[in-house]
Amino acid sequence: MPLASSSLVQVTYIEEATFGVTPNVGNSKELRITGESLDYTISKESSAEINSSRTVSSMVPTTASASGGLNTEISYLEYDPLIEATLQSTFTVFGTAGVGATMTADFAPTTITASVATTGVNLFTLLKRGQWFRVNAPTSPGNNGKLFRVSSTVAPTSTVITLDPGTPATAGSAIPNVSVATSRLTHGVAQKSFSIERRAGDTGNFLVYRGMTPRQMSVEVSSGSLSSFTFDFMGKDASSGNVTFMPGTPVASKAFDIHSGVSGAYCAFWLDGAPLTNTFVQSVSLSYDNALRSQEALCSLGAVAIGSGTIAITGSMEVYFADGALFDKFKANVNTSMVFTSVDGLGNGYVFTLPVANISSYQVQAGGKDQDMMLSLEFTGLRDAANADVTLRRAIFIDRVGSAVVY
Image (cartoon, rainbow, N blue to C red; front, top):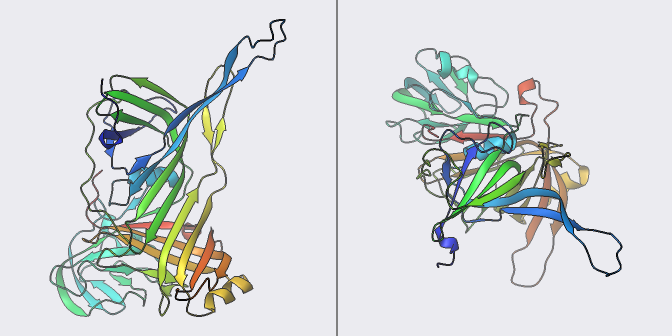
């Protein structure tokens, strides 16, 4: 009889139509992971009955729950259904599958102008102020594959995208076969749950966790390390067997490359609406928490539903200390904005934007000689309540840039 090895584990998942019920139609998706902590817990109570033998007469289940997390390395498209479910929303896709139709365009340092007005799903006005996008322009090396940001003050027209001065274009006229690639995600209220199955390849055992609702997503980007997502779940129950609980045929994982803190043609960190200069960030982490709670009822061992609470967006940064500018913001309680990227070598990836962030903790110390002085910051993401565009009154945006989206 073989003993199970973690090296032969495969995780698959499928979205549930009904909370806690694994669908009997459709196809599950395989998932690339570096580790998992999925767990099923049954809380039991011993009887308090008094008897002359001085023994406990019984132990009875009182509640149960599924929980745990999935550890991953960031790669394009692989985790998008889980990212969407964590933010309780879906990506708004530009063009077809996230890539606009090809066009002829003129490039100036602060504008991209289409030769013919855009229409339909390719309409420039669908892009929001501050949204990030990738340009595909095979005959314009200075612009091809580059990430640009729509101006935060000037909205696009049907023919012109005004660019943020922090992402200038290389000038060129009548450039053919130009396309814009982007999709945008922000938070909503459409809660989703999944059945997640772990298969031990050497023992043939399948364990499915049902009602798994994303509680928290963490993003880690650091110099000298592979970038990572961690997804944490709250669920209903679990079952074990010698055959899969999933319907259909598993869909293979995507083949896009892993991200690192220095990968990609465009790697950036912005504060206060501009690229950070003369100060260097060693690492950044971001956590998005839905404050979920288990809702339990009579006649059900495990949750009957999961409640969502107040969104908490927090994070931390390690920065090489250079000056007191960030301390001044911390002391004066002045909000800032924050942008960071995670992109692979082919330019496929994500841009994370916190339009309003408050520095909640500031610490810098000289711990000993021959060491870099590091500034440790903690921050909290806040809703951009003052934005004139009501659709931009959000606490976080994730812009997906890259190849056409096929789930």
